[in-house]
Image 1 (tube, helix red, strand yellow):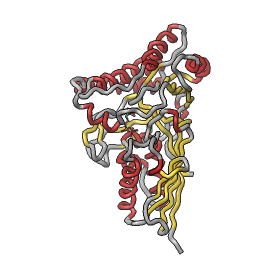
Image 2: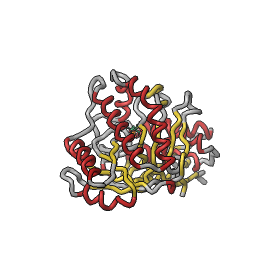
Image 3: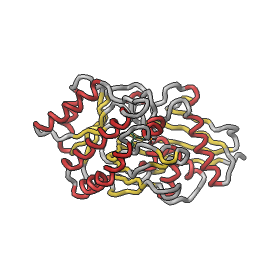
Image 4: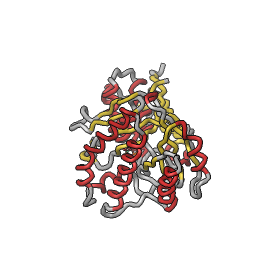
Length: 335
Ligand code: DP6
């Protein structure tokens, strides 16, 4: 009889209000700064992991295709996906003191072409399914730290709702925890997809280049104040306060990217046109605020009572290919 250990986990992507940009430790994915995010209930990865003696190697499938046959992967980093996942599973095997290989089947509920190139949901689901399959009893904090080793932002997809990633000073202390549950504030994140192409520079490369920007230190100096503002906005549920701060923060990230050496441009023409338009819509009472990760797509944060009206405007805006509506989501769970 073959020994088999199996688990299934589902994890959300997350959108950062305060961004993680720049790594203090590239091996451990330790960030220079704390960050804050909201889980997205409509951008989920479901991952099944089965460890068994019948597998001679780790077998990885993404949306039913073997990983090594996929050239363009939406939610793992360029080319090195397989290596990165196997390395992550080696960490889990080491903790469990087991040497079994696994079959890993990962599936996104959002279209692969949506341009949401986040590995956060991918590595959060992978980590949770892996440790649960092997019966490891880790705390949420420990699971979050472990997920971080796969992809930094994945640590924020483990806890529920609105999440704070404490930058920490070593592997154990760099982990995320929930600030508020998903039902704390009826917010919406409408992803406005303006490009479905894989970004030319991965976040991984972007992190490494960040330090070469003359404005990188300046940004770090600004962050403590900005973090206090976001925490306060979440506490008192003040959209204007939250929105103005996330826009300032997103622009800052891109200033760092554009002033890195070599410069990295993530925006396209539609990104800029839409940023300007969102500000105009606010003058007409449509209170949406943008944030942008390391890509050209915008995330428009608004209150749920205005999501329909804002979504309507977005889908009719030239350059917007499609939108995806998200509400605050729970953290990673086994199913
Ligand atoms: C700009 O290294 O976690 O989204 O592995 O590509 O998902 P991926 O990225 P990761 O960096 C994320 C950078 C960011 C900001 C953020 O999510 O905090």
